[in-house]
Image (tube, rainbow, N blue to C red):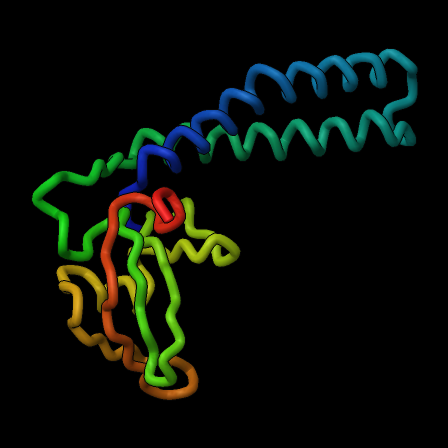
Length: 162
C-alpha cells in the first residue's frame, strides 16, 4: 500500500503534468485525430489509430493524476522536526565500509533513484523515521543485513549551502 504523502515540490510537479496533458497535449492530439479521421478509411489510417491510442493513454493518465492529487497530503517540514528524521528530510548515512550516502525521504509518487530520493515506504526510510544523528539503523537487504550510522539530517538539500 502506498502512503499518501508528498512534498510540495512533488505535488507541484504532478499538477504541472496534469495541466500540460489536459491543456496542451490533449488538444493537439485531438486535432490530429480529427484531421486523420477526415481522410477517410480509418481501418488502415496509422495516424488515426496512433492518435486514438495516444488519446486513451492521455485520458488514463489524466484520470490517475486527478484522483491521486485529490488523495495526496502535502507535508511541509516544521521547525520541531530539526534534528530528527521525518518525511522530506535529506539524510547523510555512513555504511560499515565508511562510505557516505545521501538520501531524501519522499512520497512513493516522487521517488527517484537517480536523485537518491527514496520512498517513505522503503525499508531504509522506515528504519530511519524518528532517528537522530549518531543513531544506527539495520536494514534487511537482498544480500543480508546492512547497517548505517546517521551522520547528518537536514530539511534542505546538502548542496544548498556547501
